[in-house]
Image (cartoon, rainbow, N blue to C red):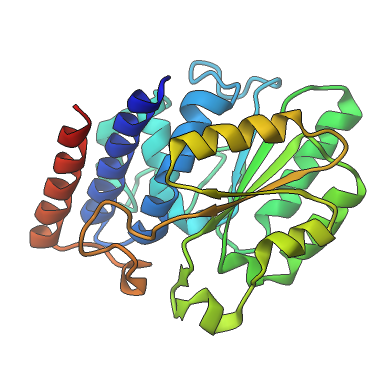
Length: 276
C-alpha cells in the first residue's frame, strides 16, 4: 500500500474502533485511536500474514501487550479480512467472540491472549526465541503502552531479549503520554524511555507514531538491524482524529454516548474526505 492508501485505511480502522466501543457501551477508545496508524501499518504493510490461513506456522507474530486496546486490534483484523467488519458491533456483548481483551482461542488472527499488563513482552520474546531455536525466519512484534512499561516484568523481558540478541523482535511503545490516572510523567515517569531500552541492549528508534513516512522508515531500519532487538518509541496522540477525545485522559476507558458517537464519526468522515 502507498501512504495515501494507508492513511485511508487507518480512518476506517478508527471508525471501527469508535463503532465497536459505542456499541459495547464500554471499552478503551483513547489508546486504540492513538495506535491505529501502527496497527494499520503492521497488518497492511509490514507483517507476513494470511487471513485465509491465520495459524500458518511461518507467519509473523503480533502480541498486543496493552490488551485493553483490543478495539484497535479487532478493527484492523476486520479490515484485513480475518472476520466481518459488521461483527465489531458485537464487542463485549454476551455470546460474542470479541471479548474485552484479545482471546487467541476464539478470535482469528490473535496470536496471544493478553490484558494483564506487563506480560506481553515476555511472551513476544519467547516467540522470537522459538523462531531462532527452530530455524524459522518469522518476526515477532509487540505493542506496549507507555503506562504499561511501568510494570517491572517489561524490563525483565527486555533484559532477556537484549541478552539473547533477538533481532527478530520489535517492540513498539505507544507513547501517547496518558494513562487512566493522567499523565504517565506524573503517575510514575518512565522517561527517558529510549535510554532505558538502550541500556537493555536494544536498537532504539524515536518516531512520530502517527506519521506513516516515519513508521515506514522505522520498520525498515528495524528489519535491517542485526544482533539486537529493536524498540520503536512512537510518540502519538491519544484519541487521535476524534475532536473531543484528543489528548484527554478521561477517554482512556470510556464509551461515547449516541450524541458523542455521531460527532466522532463526523470527525472521522471529515478526515477521510480530506484525503480524497
